[in-house]
Figure 1 (tube, protein in one colour):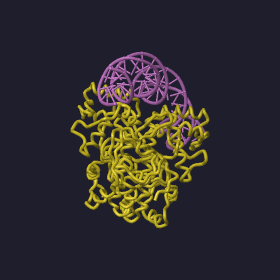
Figure 2 (tube, chains in turn brown, yellow, red, orange):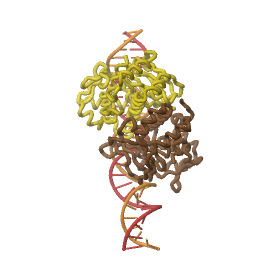
Figure 3 (cartoon, helix red, strand yellow):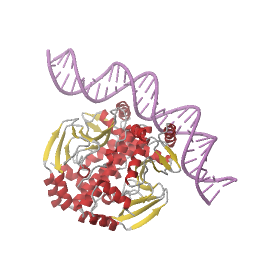
Figure 4 (cartoon, protein in one colour):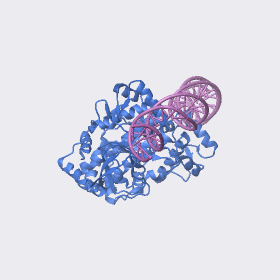
Length: 239
Length: 239
DNA sequence: CGCTGCTTTGAAGCCCTTCAAACCAGGTGG
DNA sequence: CCACCTGGTTTGAAGGGCTTCAAAGCAGCG
């Protein structure tokens, strides 16, 4: 059930059998959420964190006029709100973008882990720092990359991250977000996202077929994005 | 010496005398860096973290064509690269924007803390999660706020953060960054930053005098920024 | 007192937005 | 089983916020 989560952790850190048991023991409850369901509301006091098992979710902030900005996409294996363990309430909402299956982990159990498993604690600390690294890369995208480059970068990132948890083919992966969702990730309008997608499609670089994204020309995509996966910390094994 | 750091921590968490001693004992060396000095280079393996004592520093990423994006500004009291403790190398540079005085904290000592002081570990975990919250707010700015609103928001944020460590007056604080630095924070060009500043100056909202920012009309500034300081987690005391 | 780096201003242009409407696919009910 | 409805996609035309390019103004400093 939490195999994807373990895949993600082990891609970067050593996890002992003891630690694995502790993780498995930390899960309390499994839930399912429909698409568009806000399962964590900003500013609400929290007593558990949410591990995503299936589906795509996001962290979302917005402005008074309704302009929305997604600050991170979450995929299966991610702890979508591990940071709420230390923050106690969040500055953003968490929304299921597709139907999602999640596992809840009570903060009380995380606290036990933090008392009894210093190394595992550092692993989870690392996990929230990885989220922050993704935020920084998105800041670079939002601040300095063109619309086309931003979009290309997002698909490169998803391809790598989904690959780690066994959810991506060599050049494609399931993708069921709307163009509006993409626009909310990229700080663009739907209209412009549509035009950029059209351009990439016509150049034979990125396409969609039956709910799957197809990275038809991956090297061009990476080139357009100036994609450097170092920020995803794939080759590090800290202790 | 690390009083500002303690002020920052205690603003949000209880720190016992034991813990304070552990923190003081963790500092090894004090250094001074000139303005524009890159004191941490991306991708380089690290064995210490850097506590900022005086001056302003930033986290910076860039693109091949030289476009720069600052992902966070650091003020006295901040651990500028506490996240390198778990990440081991960084995805960005750390640069002194003004002359800076810093204290180095070896990762070995942080590791000791993480083994012996679970609560203090959570406090530092919290600190890196706070940086991530700032990243998210900047993502919202970069993606969805207008240039004027973005700039106003940055000054509201600095005013609050500097206030916590005793470095802001009611309506002003020392500010010695260039308009280029601001542009790199805001994802804009210097030229446009200059025009926005002119506009705010003429409206009597924000001015500069002898190296200090003057928030002449703070309520307008907050209004323009849609500033809500919740993301700075000022009123939380997690355990 | 002339460098040097930062600020300021103008003119022109482009990337992305806004507004508006048509198109299309999938699900529902008559 | 088709007609309809709804939400998402696509396209066009016009406009605006910010950039680009270029150059002048200005302040601090050796």
